[in-house]
Length: 360
Length: 170
Image 1 (cartoon, one colour):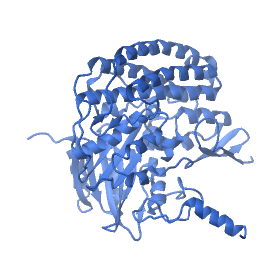
Image 2 (cartoon, chains in turn brown, yellow; image 1 turned 180 degrees about the vertical axis):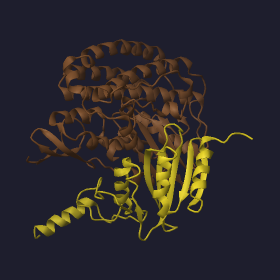
Image 3 (spheres, each protein chain N blue to C red; image 1 turned 60 degrees about the vertical axis):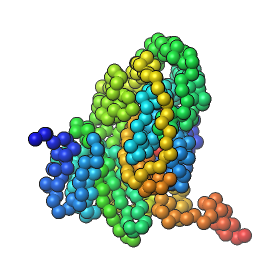
Image 4 (cartoon, rainbow over the protein chains, first blue to last red; image 1 turned 180 degrees about the horizontal axis):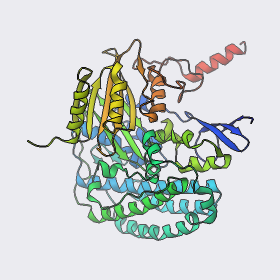
């Protein structure tokens, strides 16, 4: 047997900059070593040199084009926990609406990348097209398509415009009918099933031992979601369920994401119906006393952890961000041992690793 | 007498098993427990948390530079699926020669977390299989960046250009 060292990347069409170092024998990959750090911007060091308000656009760009509304919630909750600030009810509902709309957009984006990796490009066009409807809704609410800076310390910046509720409900009805088309076109497609079933099976005991989070963990059968374990904002008022998968292979990881889109539509309908009237922001000077807090929120890719240490000045003393893709990174070398070379893109895309999340 | 909460039971079990090595163990709020221990016993307490109490899902490992007190603090955050409690296992080590035993055998998911702390703070983890640069460029030869006394007098780009000029004899 002769082992060849192969290097793929860092520029490749499947995601942002990420390099794989493979040991290959013929068509079989023996070992994979990920090489990260191409999009490292030093956000934790930048956060120490800026005030809490100036940090809002910086933290948002940890994961900018996929899930910025879900990312921001953890940082704001850490500040509000140390300050003891109570956010008005209407602002909490608006924060949840922005976060859930962003979750749907992010899962549709993940599905489009998955379909490109298998070569079924019709699905790429359909999901990106439907994602435009959601981004248009977010633009009416916040003024931006992907990086909003909508949530701020003490509430949100803008209120819901007139006509938003009716338009949102119309689009959510359309999206719910469309998921049936997605199932027929992609998930029940025979070619896709041959490529994605039984590829990259992650056992539940391994997933817990390695610290995997998000839909990857739920596809292996573990029912763990921060929105149910430690409800934050107003998630304890909504009626929704946590979908799980049976086998833990790449097919299950995509199917769980589609089922989560259906659950997000349920949450959004309840939020739009029950939102109370009231103020949207409680403005105070962000003077944060001495203290520390660790908050967890459920973004689209999994659990975001924020650890904030404050020393009473206008700038944070230490802000440590643990993104979900950094915790899921260790699944990649674990799963890519003795697999055919053609399975590597499927495994990588099904884990939904965004290199900007990994590097910060 | 009211029943003790899950968080208080965790604090009591750790204090009962390691009475001299636990400096401070307390419940911070609902779902959050903080345990501060001596550096040489963190491996045994980690094993106890994982095997006896069921804390097997590692959430994050973080380092802090307390430059005025001349020490580093390293915190391991671990979560338990059934108890739904997050424990912050923390220890302080001196700033001049920072070493700590690696907990990769206890929580395998901490592999990349410990590597990043080594690269950003300069804390050595004994027993870690691969302490090499993760996020910084491959030819990084400056001091660890996240320390509070890190001052980069010139940018990395300028140093690279100086190196190229020297190598090409100019």
